[in-house]
Length: 252
Image 1: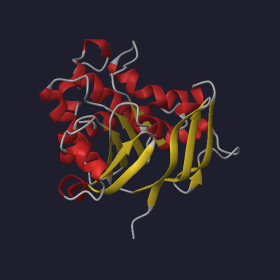
Image 2: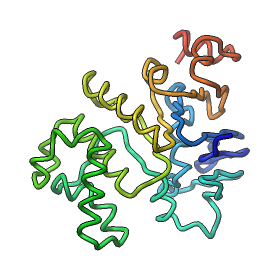
Image 3: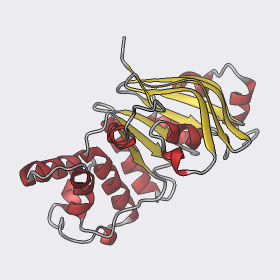
């Protein structure tokens, strides 16, 4: 049986008095892609950000229940958040390259984490850019500003930056929603290839994208995880009427 890399057990999250997540139970096994789908404001991104504690940055957040990454409880007091975020890479909706060179963008996480070996940094940067399917486009301009790249290239650079610190899990919050169709296709292709090495969870509003790239799909509604199954099952034979209505466009 495959290892469970990411898990939530009876997990609840509150923003002040508002309960954003209700009794979530979820598992993602290694080398799988899971898509979170559902209407806006239903808890998809909130759960995604719970796996690397990005929600800590919001005032008034409290949680009950458990989230685990690699078998370790994420909210345990002994957990070093910086170490956790090394294991759990994050790619956001809008490409957010730093105002630095292409090379330094990818090297950034390594330097912040205390890597000083120039040879190792160079090796890791090149490998990450290759893994992000960007090498052929940027190999002759690594010293140039990342801001000169197109939107799609910038997003692949951000993926390379996440890969450089060698995480085991990659979270993606609508990684292609700001991109044109050609760039979106490249990102989808890349996500599919990365599954060989990583466990990936992607939030998407694009149902066709969920159907194309994911092995499993989880449907959220009003803070609850309504249904979680193989993608093919969710899209062809969902158990819940709510899931069926969302997928067929009757609401959401």
